[in-house]
Amino acid sequence: MNHTLKEIADATGVKLIGDPHIQITGVASLASARAGELIFVQEEKQLADADRSAASAIIAGPFAEKSAAVKPLLISNQPRLVFCRAAALFDQPPAHSGIYSTAVVHATAKLATNVTVGERTVVAENVTIGENTHIAAGCVIAAGVAIGKNCRIYPNVTVYAGTILADRVVVHAGAVLGSDGFGYVRDKHTGRYEKFPQIGRLEIESDVEIGANSTIDRGALDVTRIRRGTKIDNLVHVGHNVQVGEDVVIAAQTGISGSAVIASNVIIGGQVGIADHVHIEEGAILGAQSGIPSNKTIRGKGVVFWGTPARPIKEYLKGLAALTRLARKER
Image (cartoon, rainbow, N blue to C red; front, top):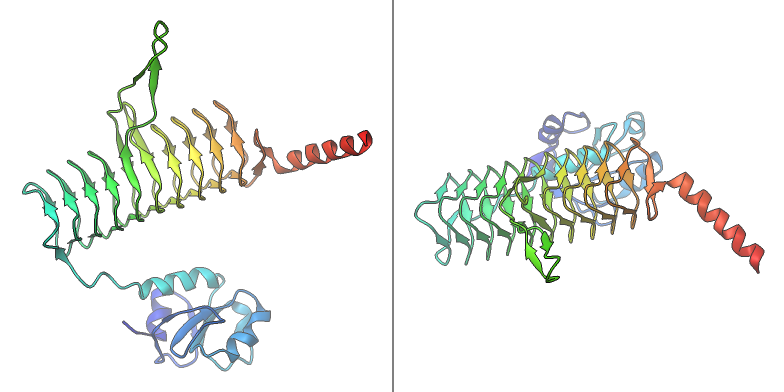
């Protein structure tokens, strides 16, 4: 579906300079743009190259308003963000809606209008699925799962019984939601481990995105909860009873142990290890490969923490410099 520049400007709430009737067919990078496509530049020094490109229009900052650019301009203080919103206008819904012939849908499942259930997908008893939700091939949606509106579930996702997904949740291929947590009790006499009950549930709020092959455990007795707007990368593990706040970003290969609490607006880098009962307060930033020991609290809005055990990066770098100086003295 094409959009005019005016339609894009109206939808994104930005100022348009130039022909409002130009048809835009999609978005692209500056290097690969073709006629009909929309690009963005963050800095004034990029504008001349963008204007010489094959793109049909440019999203740029206020610096472009009085420029000599020939191409039409969409002006915003946040060009990259507007580019994201423009790109979403071209994100076509799946062409097919309905239940594929090889899918298995239980008679008690309740599917709203315009729902897609892909090839070889299984939808168990008492599942509810909201309108315009697309479930791709090879998924398993277990008993009592509730999935909201406008969700996108990619191939081979498994959603365990009782899990709740709100609206506009995106789950990428191979993710597992609501599996048993890793909880065992050791018999002091025999040394053997017996499984602690894993009978809680998983609740995922609206606008959450979960990366490929990530796993999120159900609560042991209560609830594991991922709050609105959180974005989880590929290959992330979230343990049982974990509470993740709003607009948290978690990069790949991070592991979060049971009963940890991650407050809103936290940023977690790749390969971070968070032990059980840790509390990460609002706005903290955990650098890649940081390690947080059990029961520790990390606080400092906007503060970057690094190392194992994680500490403010200035402190970490000072310690590293001191060790370097000591090593030189010993030579």
